[in-house]
Every structure is written in C-alpha cells, then in structure tokens.
Length: 145
Image 1 (cartoon, rainbow, N blue to C red):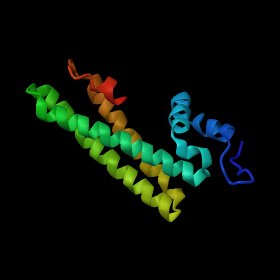
Image 2: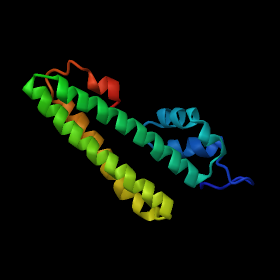
Image 3: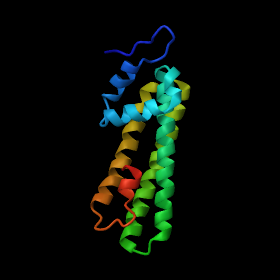
Image 4: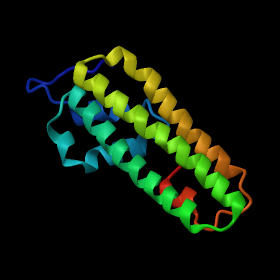
C-alpha cells in the first residue's frame, strides 16, 4: 500500500494504521498518534512533524526524570546507570532536533539515520537498566524505555 493523499491531502485512518504497522509497536503508535488532535487534518509531512513533536516531548520528560534521579540517589551504581541513560537521552533529544530540521527543510532522505540513532540510544538506555540489579525508582516503567 502506498500512501496516497485524499482529495483534501489528509491522511486517512487506514493510512495512519498502515504507517504504524511498520513500527515495533503498531498499536501504541496508532493510539499515540490518534490521541493527538493535530493528526485529524494532516498530510504525511504533518504526521511526521506531529510524531517528532510527540517523541521530543516524551524524550524531554524522560530526560528530566533521569536528571532528578541522578541528583537524588546516593547509590553509586544507580547514579552511574542514571548518568549513562541521561547521556543517551541528551543524544536522543539532539537527534530529534536534527530530524525536525530535516522535515522543515524537506530533506526527508536524511531522516532515517537520525531515527535509527535515536532508537539505538533508547535501546542502549534500556539495556543498561536491564543489567541493573536494583532500580528503586522504577524508571523503566515510568519512562517506557
């Protein structure tokens, strides 16, 4: 199925479902996108902008949470884990800003590299938490990493 524009240029519900089917969590993707009122009247470029905006808000929220945990913990092992994850999310936020600039400039062919980089940074953070013996703050659950 190729993404075709309706007469109004808006993506249909079916097209959004199809795009989300290409993700690791198609149900979550669809739910998040449809929960944002901006998706009701967007074309493919608009959907990309909304997606990056939502991802940026989430990444900034997680980044702030991790920063507060770095400052609050006295456990040196957890502090190091949080610092590592904090650094990963610095990179995620940077990658999302680059993607947003690519979308604004119409340089869509370059986006896949930054998307992959951001995904790998989140994955690395999750891997670090997977090796932790104790995460009393339950950051994995709170952040969705």
